[in-house]
Image (spheres, rainbow, N blue to C red):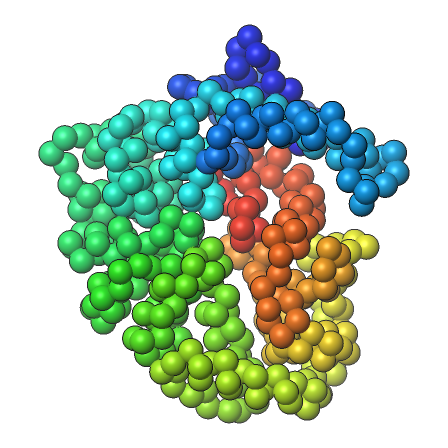
Length: 433
């Protein structure tokens, strides 16, 4: 989004699609937006991603990038102008972010999203809110978006948060206010969730799961809780078949912090077993997952043929999001079978979800690397589900960014009209508020 930084006021002004967005600087961060059909400015919670590293070094690097030549991969006058515009916009954002104290930026940067919500809470509630982020990051993350968790959201959430953070109040009081079970065990569980694994849907699922005593007992025995652990323990089918030793090993794997890769593999494995009338085994060790999946992948061609035969007379719906040169929608069972055979994964097991349930859609990613992209339907629209490489391998950050930019460009009109919406940077979900 094109932007301009006003040094005299410290404000950042962003433009796009006839909409203007204004961000005031720290220590009173505020956001306003005005669209082409608006008569007056409206308050907004804009999408920002705060850097945790030294801001002056980042600014110096960006200035050098602007003064230097474009990368060899950027060709054509239009592409060069667009890349330069992006660099200028990022530099303007860094100038705005420089007003924020470095310790606050570092604390907020450890979370995957909703940086503005956390920044607003810190600005309004001071050191008490910062202490909560240090001691219980997941609880602080939920508190900064309290209206998502409360059945009856308050009209002035920051006033309520200040009251909850006063001296003498306990974290269990915050749990109760957010409709979590307010036990000491649940408080300790939330304190062990690593910040990068915090997501609104994950914490909502965790809140529901903490109503079950076996889940609480299991999580209390883990020193560290990440995305894969949360995905498994909040899914009854996966939880029932996964031994504690697997969860223990998963909890220590930092590669499972941001995205629950292994939990997704388990879920896909279950889906393929169900489509093939195979009873999935009990998972006692990670080796069982890898060995069994390898065996299935070796026979992926036969499995794909048998699964696709049931889809031949089921037309796929129109793609929910248009493709482009680098991201191509898979529009029939033949393309789906080819994708599974080429990429050596069980994407064919998603055929029924695409053609019948219509809650999933699959795309081929051709650049910057070959991968398979899943879009999943949610209550608030389509979101990025999984992005998988050959044999379910993780893809690069550049590939994730390419998919995110593609979906963001398609959804930008929706986000601007909603005013308070933003695409979740990691999952692609359109998050309201």
